Image (cartoon, rainbow, N blue to C red; front, side, top):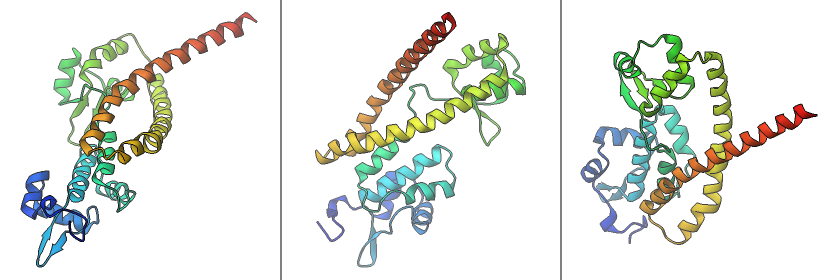
Length: 241
């Protein structure tokens, strides 16, 4: 173990780091100048990289895949303490990955129309976006939740009002943000400390979060259904008065 706290066997050369994270030397150096990752650990005239460098670069890549701008990435990374361990950073990555098993499929407008079974109007696209089914990308293409597309198009064909879809999207977004904050805080204060104290690896942390995600979705659906039942009962009782 050296002054950096890393075993020499854990340190990587720049070439080894680029191969490990699949990133160019130029990009790694750029992110270093932006303080997204710490400078290399110096050994004489050579620089080496630790698991901390690897985990932070992987997090930068994860943020990029989620459409974060460089400015947003800088702000996100600035909130991570310098003393954060690779396991701490693995938790950030795990929470960013999709919570649903079906990943969106990217396609052109023509491919989207083909999948929908008819030509979609701009209003249709707006409604599908509000419903969380179709998302326009910067390249003029669309990311589509294929497993839900036929159901949502059927809803359009039944005359579902676009205004209702947009209003519902605002409700989902507002409560979704609050839910995300509270669940993140719960995991950070009640779950993560237990695994950190036991010396759990970053792979274990990711597996815990990935196993938790479908259970959380099922719990949210159950809570929503229970709340809807309670709301209906309250409406019936109110009308019976």
